[in-house]
Image (cartoon, rainbow, N blue to C red; front, side, top):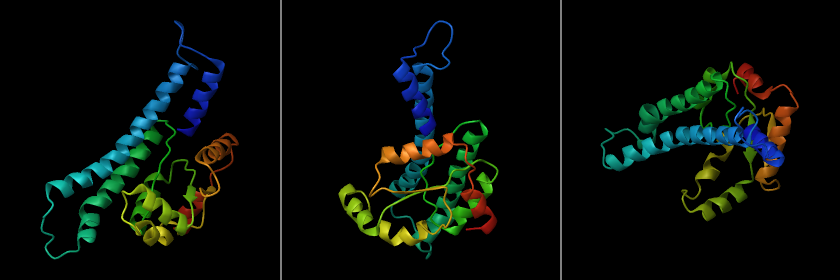
Length: 202
């Protein structure tokens, strides 16, 4: 989607508008593309969170038959939804779309699912991180996260040793990160991190 935003900015600068002849290369075409990708990504993210919220709100006192809640939810609900999440990304890629994915690979099962489904697709593997202290500060400011959750997941989430690009958001603005990703795509450099992870299995 970053590429589409860049293309939209370019046609806006040149003020290329829709004519009777063609929509190709116009503001209208690029705006449509950006809105399309936003809608797709929102659907993927919303499906995962909304379904979990639906289960929790509809059956707040459901019996777990002695199993720990987290383990039961992961086994029956979360893991299949994660698989659907990566399968949807694969579908959009197979249809010829560039997809920007905000994902937390929280355990080996999710990692293996991601690898299995996306191994034959071009993937730029990017890490966006900051210090544990900064995470805790942002967590407090957001007010919609369990305090301490980010810190407890930190070492597991950032356990990979291969990335195509690495960003520290304590010293870089989001626009700077986006520009670096766009420049990397335009440079036609080989995307190697994901391939190395596949061979080394993390």
